[in-house]
Image 1 (cartoon, rainbow, N blue to C red):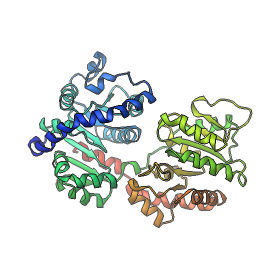
Image 2: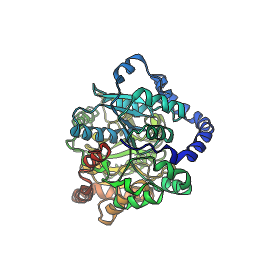
Image 3: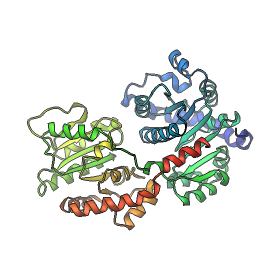
Image 4: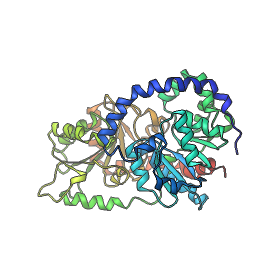
Length: 437
């Protein structure tokens, strides 16, 4: 069991707790709007304040679970992969998987079982963190990509082993570096930090993390997912019902942001002159933006069907708008060319995961804003294993070139797969590290 280290972060935590109520109130209107848009926000609302119904308390009685603390869908998918690896190491393992967003919680709840309990993250106020720990009584606490300072400090004070499965974007790194005197002591409360690339070790050390506690295990998101998602066959059947021919080329925009849906719709409309059977699939990053994405598609002159309402039709629509969550990985299986969202529109920065379509054997194209995946993207571009498009005309040219050249598509996907193979086993290595086995 770790030694309590609460005293090392006393001043930063005091400052955090003084500023937290002000920041929370400032962000509350935005949180409220998002919850209302996503719907179903009243369900289990008390869990956000560490209040649990009797049935949940009965299932959590006795504690002894590993608490895996996630945020939204992407982090929860990573958490589930890590949890599966941990269960292989410890078949008797029991887990609490928490999430912040309603979509992340829905994914966690979908995977709940006798040994996995899904809950909402409590607001990171000192008394709520204390109450949550008193109720859940975890044997260890694992943060996925982001930490809650009060929850971390409370766990450290109780001697509960803590770990962070880290992702350090350039934006976060710059912010942490500016406030190193504040964030460094909080990072040093962690028992273990799992990082993705060897160069990340020095970056975390420079931000104040304890060097002895930072370990490179590889990127769990880039670890091969094992068997492919069986839903791909269902999706091909769905496309058949929409009268999309099985050999029709498919352009898929994954995790798109505002402006990118319209851009892809305009490009697909123009390319259908050369590729008349070209079909567009758009999967927005946030499902609550579906109506906004639909408006962009319509403005570009395309007809579309909603994934949630797709039914037998007399003629094929031009586009399928996927307004459901947790399906993107399987949709990649039916694509011919994949555009990675959050990388090209004026509202986009950081990019989304470019590796999942690579595992599906698909070539990827993205915009210049892939900062969150800088290391692997640089390797892709150096090896001509992906294409970066700086604007809409360049994106159209890249997609057209790939649609014309099946051999190039196959070569690009193959090269990209060779590059990410270096991360094979990352989930197992991370699981061993965070469990301390």
